[in-house]
Every structure is written in C-alpha cells, then in structure tokens.
Amino acid sequence: MRGRIAAAAALVLLLGGCASSTAPGSTATRPSLITAGPEVRTATGEAARRAAEVTAAWPGSAAEQAWEHGYFPLQDTTEWPPEGAFRDGADKAAYLAGHIDLATTLPVSVSGTTEVTFADGSRLALPQRSAKAVFDSLTERRSGCATGCDTRLTVTAVQPGTTTVATSRGQAVIPVWEFTITGYDRPFRYPAVLSQAPTRTMPALVTGDTTLHSVSADGLVLTAGVPHGSCDTVLPGEVHETDRAVVLIGRITPVKSGLPCNAALLVTPVEFRLSRPLGTRAVLGLADGRPQTPTAR
Picture 1 (cartoon, rainbow, N blue to C red):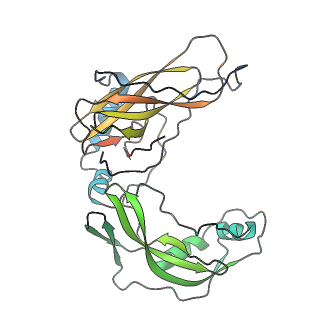
Picture 2 (cartoon, rainbow, N blue to C red; picture 1 turned 60 degrees about the horizontal axis):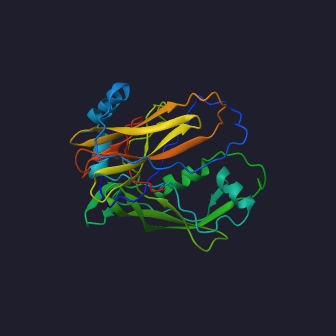
Picture 3 (cartoon, rainbow, N blue to C red; picture 1 turned 135 degrees about the vertical axis):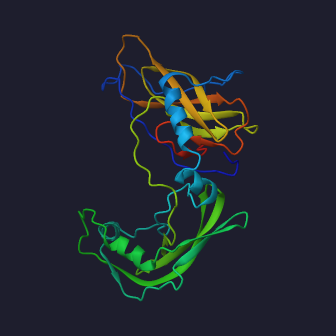
C-alpha cells in the first residue's frame, strides 16, 4: 500500500449468532488492540483458500489496472453541494425529487475527452461526462417528496471547473461541472469524468473479513478492524501474502458463557505482521477482493 494513500471507505458486516435482547447490566467498552506479536501467522483452512482466490484474481484484473494506472477515486465523487446546502427542507426535497429546471444553455465539449492530473504531474485522458448527462441524472431522480413538493429549483449557469480528490495514485485534480442554482451563492459541482474502478457489488458475508486501519512506518505491521458479535472473542489474525497483494484474515471464536448476548456489532483493532514490508502491494478485502486503504480510527 502506498504511504501517500490517505482515505477510503469502510466495509460494514452484520454478524449473526447473538440474541436480540441486551444482557442485563451490560455496558459498551472500547475494544483493546490485539498486538501482532513477533511471528507471522499464515492463513489456514477455508479462509486461506478464499484468500488465495482473491490474490490470484488480482494481477491483470480491471481493478488492478485502474488502481495502478487509471483513475480510482478513494472518496465519494458523486457530487459536491455548496457548504450549508440546502436553504430549507423544500429545496432539499425538490433536489432529491429531480424538480430542477434549466434556464441556460449547457456547454458542449468539442473533443469529448478530458484529463485527470495527478500529484506527480502525470496526466490521464478519459472520456468526458457531458454537462447534459449531469443535468439528466439530476432530473431523473425519483425520491419521495413528503413536503415542499411544489418547489422547483432553477439552474441559471453551468461552467467547467476543477476539484481535488484522493485516488489510488495520490491526490488528483479532476474536471467538474459547476451548476449555479437560483438562491445559492456557490455552485453545485459534479464530476466531468467517471471512475475507472469496476462497479462494486455487495459481497456475501465472509467470516474473517477485515477493514484496514493503518500501516506501520516500516510496512511490517498492518492494523485492521475485525467485526464480531458481543459474545465473540477476537483472536490474533492471519495473513495471506503474494508478491502482488496481501489479504488480512480476522479470527473469532464464540464465548460459551451461558449468558445472553446483545445485538451490538463490535469492531476490535488487530495487528497483523507480514513476512516482509508491504511496499507497493495492495491490501485486498477477503469478501470482495477490492483494494483497501488505511482508514485510521
């Protein structure tokens, strides 16, 4: 994992096996860190088989190509409303319902392409998402409208702009379309280029999946969150390593106390020791096989 990567989104797992009632007198406590220890714990069993499938599918995949050489955002790039939006509930309801009118001419791209500029100065030419495509996506929204259903918003100007986003290749400046809407001093911004990352689908629940939190300065110890139920004990984790990727595997065991469990989903931080520094290898999720980035807690 590159040290320059700074942000991502965390995977939430719902773990079964606990009763829906809360144990009498139970209190929520912050889970303690389970340290890595000096030895490398290599993955075994069914989790090791799944991890091997994940790492084998990574080299040459569309996800790896986008991660290494393309435009792979590490944050939500759907839209950037102005700070403090919306003025009131009626405006928000109209926006979510697609009640938006156009009172200007939309700019048209001549070439149909645009560029993403990375922090190292490299540029990537990609198809441009047109201003019309953005406007159409806004008016096609069909969310329910409980209040302010008669309110309509009006776009009075659209112009090109830029914004900076975190990507797998570091910070990048991307083109956006800036939509001026009546009543707002600052524009609503939308990406004029789309991510090259493959579409994400919700994976089936996989026991042992983790969420990467941090990487040590020497790259030998990774800390990740292991989700579990209130009646589970978290054990030291295991790792599956190749020369291109790493998969972290959390391990838990039920506590046979005879006491009722509560329905809380807990996440305990666990350290995982690698056999060699992580370097540029990707950390892949056990469930979905997608690269993860540190999300410090």
